[in-house]
Image 1 (cartoon, one colour):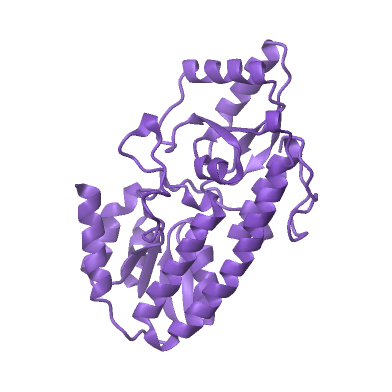
Image 2 (cartoon, one colour; image 1 turned 180 degrees about the horizontal axis):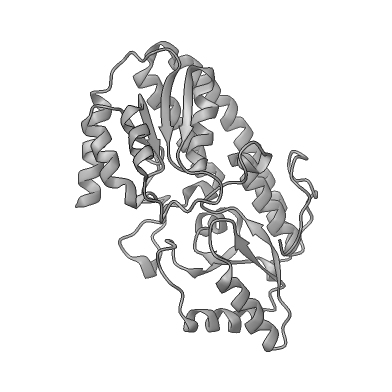
Length: 320
């Protein structure tokens, strides 16, 4: 009921949004993936301010006083939605009641697309950006929403979105081709938490996470022991750490597998809830997914170029 109430409140605010914004208006966004999409679509028409930087976990993020000020002073606000930024709900409501247009970039996603893991009944998996085709819909939401609040530049936003979606289509094809090159018996992705379920469904990879879809949950000894059994039985060669999640459980898996006579290595660091360093290729959504796909395929025995789709990746360093 709370989620429904939030959605209704924000939706009504968008309907009442102004049709004219100041020149070079300010858009405030939450996680890096949303920020990057908005920058691509908004182009030179807006100043885009992202609240969450490199390595920040949006599940646990609580806005600071400065963040609240930025949100209240924004002309437009975009967030991911699906309760990814659950601790910011009250702040979004406060901003919406002030009359500021507030948009969730996931609002166009069909319910049939969304995943709801059995062990988290009632909680939709929010990590939709891991399926590039799904994230294309987020681009369309941004273009449509900016066109609503800034009708004079609606065509400009749509053209930017079309260009960017074409780039994402190439990325999606690269992901499919690269991950399908992994030997079938090795197409298993084990990470710190369940951020890769959409990724696994889209690209034919079995996914296992030590924690649940939110890093607020804690993994128990039994969870780790079950995964150790699985690693040994399937002879999985590599597992992965995440940039925004502690690696202590992954290290426990390595130690447990090694003690059972099966050597498992850390195949690399993946970006899940946060992107890479600002100003780098990996600090963009395309670079983030390119890095993940290339790192996973390389570590599990697939055939991929070392520098990825666009030749811009930092050379892979396994175990780092």
